[in-house]
Each structure stands twice: as structure tokens, then as C-alpha cells.
Length: 215
Image (cartoon, rainbow, N blue to C red; front, side, top):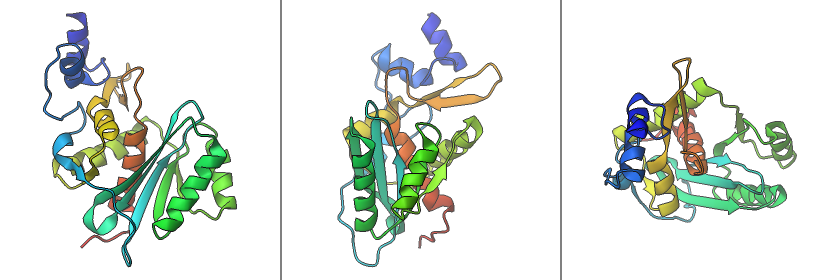
């Protein structure tokens, strides 16, 4: 009863859908407290880079103990074509992989989460490699803007996500809690990851506001 009350008032990360899934063992039909149409939109398949096609990317770097994720999208189709998971991989190997994929997919516009984990150090290394990814340092307000932009696009059924079970489960578990100030803090439930969500929202914002025209 106490946990259900927390789910109702927003203090349980993930909200009511997380309660239904984890505590009541109910099917929430591919939705989270934040995102809609999750199962329906996870239908894309991986694609090798195509000639004369514009791509965008988002990268959520991480220390060796955490998960690092790269999300690459085909701009003209609003479709995710590649996800790269690096769990327990040192930073030099992450830089090498980011550089390889950036070159492979025609040097796309992209953003990197520089909020924590040595954000300035990451950007310094990217500049050394001539990788012009934009740093994004999140606070609660900015992260909410990114999340809500992606959530609204999903309401409209615009993004086409790779049919990846890890990515799908992260988005289904993603939720929020209401802080004492009244603002929302978004994230995964305790003990779970949201690295895919971060990489995807960075890439999607490149599509939404990065000056790329989609016809």
C-alpha cells in the first residue's frame, strides 16, 4: 500500500507503470511513466551506412564499471540504425570506437553527455581526434527538455527505434520522481541503467533542433 501510494504521488521512480510491472506483475502494454508506444516503435533493423544519406549520433560515455552507449540515426527516415553497447570498456577503447563509427557513418552531427565522469576530459580527447561532437551538460531542467522532446515525438509515433531488447527494457523502466521543490527528476529505477535512453535523446535532439531538414 505504501509503495502504491508513492507510485501515485510520483515519488516512486517509474511511477504507476513501474509499480504495475514490478510489484503487481501486470502488463503495461509497452509504456512507461514517461514514454508511450514503446513496443510499437521498436521495429527498425540495423543498417550499414548508405551513400548520400545524412546520419546523427548521440553518445553517453561511462567509466569502466558502467555502460557506454552510442546511438546512430538515419535522419531522412527518423530511424535508428545502430546501437553500440560498451560495458566494462576502458575510455581509450571507447574513443576508438566512437571515432570509427563517426567516420563510418559519414561524420554525422552528434552530441555527447558531458554532465559527469570527467566531461571536460572527454571533450578534450574528442577535440584531439577532431571529433566535433557537441557537449551537453545536463541539469534537471535541461534533461527534462530533452526527455519531453523525445516523449512528445513518441506520442506522435515519429521515431523508429532498433528492435533491441536491452534498449526497449530501459525505456519501459524509465520514470521520474517529484523532488521536494516540485520539479521532476528523470531516470531509471534504482539498480537499473538508462544509458540507452540518454544516447537516444541526445541523437533525437540533433534531429529535432540540429538544423537537419527531414523531407
